[in-house]
Length: 405
Image (cartoon, rainbow, N blue to C red; front, side):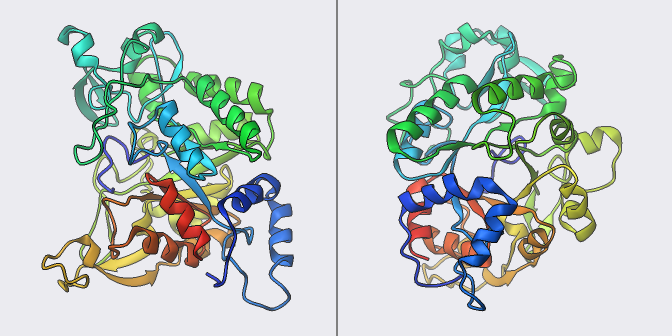
């Protein structure tokens, strides 16, 4: 995923469910939607407190955010494979389109930060384009054929993360990612789901010149061929925009997820909404006044329910944390880890009341722990509130968190 042009953001007791059992849960229950809710409730045991507070009563799923991107260069087959090896139920490819219409896995249409494109191609291949209202000068995937893309090698964009794998791995297509998920599902005896994000649909349709819904149709062609047009397919399709998801709902029965962004977190725990992270970009284009925050209000969730199956809010929407100047972890400095945790904002409960699952992002061992220094404890806090899934750069930690509930 996650977060427009940049990504700064970084229950019950006594569970002994293993990562393999969680995966079996995904295969046999999670995909079944309403039926799974009945099964989950019946498993709770009469009037006892439910084992999990998820929408379907089952263990939350762990989604490998860009694969195991905390360890290996993001959006590579190797990163996805590592996430699967560590027990993730889903792998998440962000998708952009090449000049000749292939869908490839990159966090953004710009190739500069995550590849060696500047070493392979002259600066004359750069250009300035409007990405969600922001002029950006870069090498754009839409100006390169797939053959050219395949000459590139990936690199780790975060300097504090392992750099020894830079230059080793290629950029995969959606077809290659689906093939990997199917191969690993068969080999491991558990279903690996894919969780593609359509990056900047308005940009692809207008600025890059591919036309309306070409991006969406190409994705569906691949997914329907691979899995069939079914709500039980091991697929979630996500987007920060709304119109593309509404179009997809008219074309597919696969699960759709409305992502919810923001710019920052204020000291009092409220969300800071500033362009280009204040609202879906297609809302900006068509003059819709609603913000991302509006989509999480009761009337907004009712609207989302008309076309999506779940919401994917940035985690500060779910738990209020306050910067009150207390050094809670006693390390001699005040950071976001020291914020006071005031508990649920009520968004999880409201979404569940509308029948929407909640998958939140992004949990990292090395950053973005609002109110928490321990990444496992942070994830468990959200899981005990009832989130249905977590995106994490470190899937092994996510699996440990679920197993430790």
